[in-house]
Image (cartoon, rainbow, N blue to C red; front, side, top):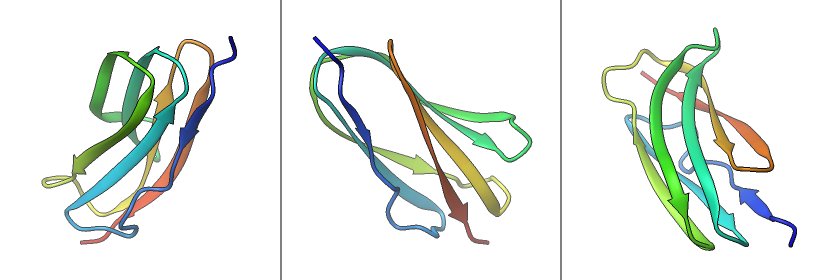
Length: 89
């Protein structure tokens, strides 16, 4: 069965200090949701677990991080998706 994953743009964007990241899984999957800076350094792991099919919301609290553009990446068993978000300071 094909695995359909939808990763949505975070909201609000730009944000300070927190934003919500939403995604949908059509089937159960091993999920890793991570945040990187523009130099490719991982700054936070938000999710790293097996999840059943469903809709998910994860809050990213960027307190303590410098303002700028960040990449959030959703990786499953079969696919990887990423989007940009802007932290204002």
